[in-house]
Image (tube, rainbow over all chains, first blue to last red):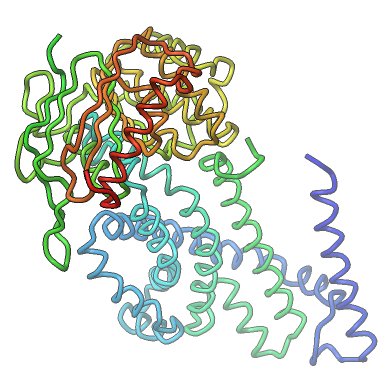
Length: 253
Length: 260
């Protein structure tokens, strides 16, 4: 790989941290008003075991929620993309459901399934992240040019065959585009649950207890840890995209 | 030789919100086995509907489509299609694109045999060396060549061409016309070509069918009894220029701009 591809983003991050540090220093903000990057490292060191434990809890629940969103969203998108009637029936419902702010759904879910913290967290992550996947799969399948279908149908191929040979692979680029949005949304979902209905698990909980103790450096440390996890997951999906839909990336072949 | 395709009194209408829209009306076309039939007519006169009827993708409201003495009521494996949009699968190599019909029609044929067949066709159209490329790496003309190979790979008796050269520049188009003649010389097939290009119809066709405006019916049939492969400059000989003028006149009538 080209060294610039690594060096440029790293330099940008270093520059941003330096500006942040400089701003806090120049304004003379105390660390109960605004933490600076140099405050974060001690916070990480002090709470290191908690970061690993809670980070893992947030991570696995996000990934499971996202995985379920992929299954559910793809299935829904297939139904909508392949059937005009189902599309007309489900689309308004889907838009309406997506329009409900998920922060308001969290207490409802927490009441419905009292005590099932992992389940609740995964459920909200799923609810918040399946929408872009369903829509993109539906659009991908629904906009298949008729000639593609005719090529196979004129040879007597079944609908299932057309789906496997053409419609599904052709939808993969849109699917991965949606997945990149969904992964961030799933993160928001897990953290919503961890912060709104605290149950002693996840980085959201660590954030909450830092807030209670007015521990600004720890709150910022959690934010950055979440950002780092988000970046890792995002690039995991980019890697999958290169494997399964690399043909759609110009200049990559 | 008998007729491979017989279209007998075919009428068809699309259902629209404002009532039925008739596109074909009492259409009759005979295409002898091994011959090349070019169909010209005004835009939107139902030519593409005709291709779908022959491919068995649609059944006409009235009349009959016969292929090999059998009435067409559903898709059959002995048809190859190519469109104006080459619709190659971007995630497959050129070779794998050409192999696609064989995966449907001959799933049990050994891979090596399928590949040999595809490579033979690709070489015929001048695409040898491009087997492992992706469609996005090829020019428009090359993609259309690959699309033709895919339409022919399973040795169909009928090749249905729906304006396959329509989106190409004039010189690339002429190259592909010559390629069509070369293919015909080596691969026996019966072809139906939909086109808007009168020169193309005269250069390629053994007969040129002029359809009237919508709803389309057979307005006239011109027979061009010249053995192929034909040289390109035949188009500039007085006899063919007269044919082109005649066709031009027929199209004007079809468009309702001149009286017969």
